[in-house]
Length: 115
View (cartoon, rainbow, N blue to C red):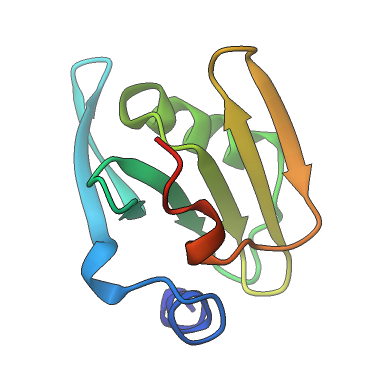
């Protein structure tokens, strides 16, 4: 399932495979955790954090809490949550603390220069 979204990001949205890190290790509240996929921008800063669930897992507030907790440390500007049937993408503005849900997944070229 994760392979499908990664293939879509690469082939349809222009995200370079070289910018993707699978199962990014991080520490959260003194616990070792792994984010599914972290994608960096052209400055090698976290740009997009991807959380993949199985098709039978409903995309719920709990899933958003999980990816948001990971993003406390990573500070990616975009989050995607998917179960293969449903996908949600949002942009995080850390200065205003505003979250904006997007209608579609953006193209890498349109967001990669965001610092």
